[in-house]
Image (tube, rainbow, N blue to C red; front, side, top):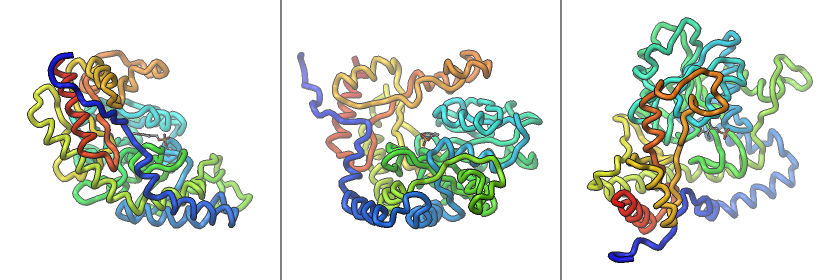
Length: 375
Ligand SMILES: *Cc1c(COP(=O)(O)O)cnc(C)c1O
């Protein structure tokens, strides 16, 4: 090879070991206590975490559940919509958002997204009908959707607004955290999320105590009092051991989100003069938590391959919008129906992003990316 030698340090998309190193002792001590008490389900750590996570989000009530998909499903079920009511969601989400709608006995209605990958009052367009019962704003990649434009579009309709905040723990809009400007937010503590458990876990945050009680009841076999089942529920609870991990991580989440913001600023600076790469925009009024740092490039698959060859763990979130997934053909969509989401799907590229990522690692990613787009 001629010319300067490309970077030789490999960089993973996500490195969870950095976080674990900081909480390892706390978690081990917490696990020992839980094991000594045998309170594996519904232990004190779960209640403490729920209080702390609600406070971290800006207030309201938190209910821990088994994963983020369940959180969305139970949030929708808590609305008690008529069976088959329509629920709007952007087609460029993770498929779980649509799955939750189906599992709640409702009908997913997909919409296109903005240039910033989000739902807005405009992107809902003519997808609202007399049968629309709710919309789900997905705070994709770590920033909140424009909740004001969504509320304005729905004013006077009685349609409920929910948030899929799986990628947005700590994100604020006009100073408001997730679950503060809607009927409720569902979040996921899948290990790779900004706040990740050591397995599956999730939660709902809602300003409405009655809704929180309904969700807790539904997720506990429809039971608020032992052996009395007032609804056909499911088993979806947050394990005490996961709550130990989540409490330890929550204490550091603001710092870790700051580290992600610092990394995003460095990417922005280093990529500012690289015309082939479109860097992500933060909406005015938003505090972004950079779950993913997603750029856009031409010839994405080629660039992705080159990055992988250089040892850079770039990814794509997500390569196929829900309306074009083979398992979702029954929704009856065709290619071309959601042009913005479809264009993004062929151009987006997620660069390595995690708390503790070093300047050298970011430098290596940028240098490999510059090589890849110029080749
Ligand atoms: C991770 C994720 C989910 C699902 O969460 P699980 O805990 O894996 O069930 C839902 N929506 C979005 C946008 C996600 O990123």
